[in-house]
Picture 1 (cartoon, rainbow, N blue to C red):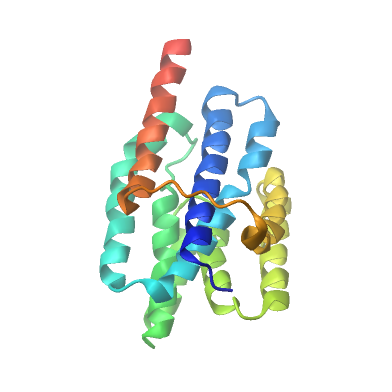
Picture 2: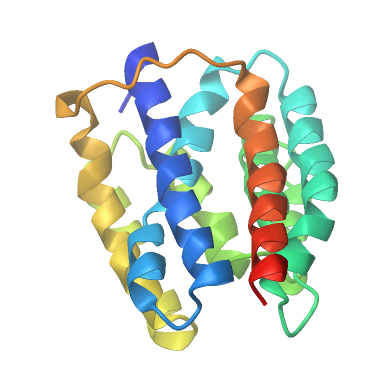
Length: 214
C-alpha cells in the first residue's frame, strides 16, 4: 500500500492526536482506561508510517541517527512523566531497532539481523519485541494484506493477552489504515522536525501539568 503525500500527512496527524490522547490519560488520568484505549491505535500508525516511508528515505543512516538522537532527547521527559517501575527506553528506540532490521535485510547484512532482533527482545524498549516487529511486518508484508493482517493481529493479540489487555484495541488501527484514502485530509503544513520534537515536548508539558496538579 502506497500513500499520497496528503494521506501520509493525515496519517502523521492522526497518529499524533491519538498519541496525545493516550499520554493525557497515562499522565493525568491514569485510573480512566478510556483515554488509553483510544490511544492504543497510535503506535501501529507510527510503525506503519515508518515502514511506508522507508523506500522514500534518501539516507537511511541519517534517518536512523535522527531516531536515536530524539530517543536520547526524549528519555528524561519519558521517565519523569510515565514513572515506569523499571528502566524502559522510549518509542524512538523501539522504532530505531525495527528500522535497523529493515535496513539490514534490504542491504543483505544478515549477520546483524539476529543481533538486532535479540536487542529488541533483551533491551527494555517501549512495547518490547512486539513494537520492534510491527514496522518490519508493515514493510515486508505491505503487498500482502491478508498475511499482514494475520501477522499484525496475531502479534497484537499475543501481546495483549500476555502483557497489556488494552493493546487488543490496537487491532482497530488496521482497518483505519485502509480507510485513509476515504478520510478527510489534514493539510496543515509543518516542518518534518515538528513530528520529532512533538514527542519530548508534549510529554514534558504533561509532566509539568501533572506536577502542578498534585
